[in-house]
Image (cartoon, rainbow, N blue to C red; front, side, top):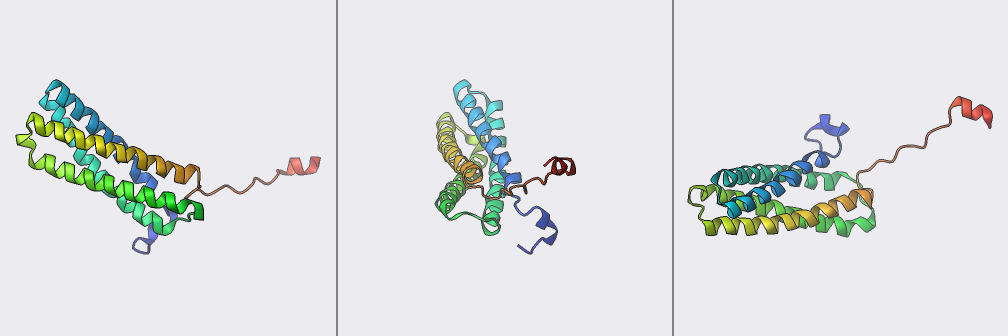
Length: 163
């Protein structure tokens, strides 16, 4: 993209952004489960913070992922995987935004039933996140997407003289 020519040195920002939602959204699930199990308001508030921050971070990851798709080279065999990764992660991002918005709107009226419903939503969200992140890892480690292989090392002068 030519919007930010100074960022050409970092041709793929997606890996920089994806790790925050991969951490924050599972933490939201853990603290929501603790809040439901123990009935603690402080853990409920912490779960909400993690969810909101995770949803914002997921938007960054989704945006840079869509940008990366236009910029990176993908082998033919990797296109099905990249499409499944895209669908799962956009679904995860949308669900995170919906859950965060709903939880924020209802934060003062979160009954035990609504807390359990939020927990169920976070379980589904984290299932999508897990499968989508695995596909993202496969894109890098199996298909080599956005991985530049180093040029073979040239023999040093000392090694060349021994031959």
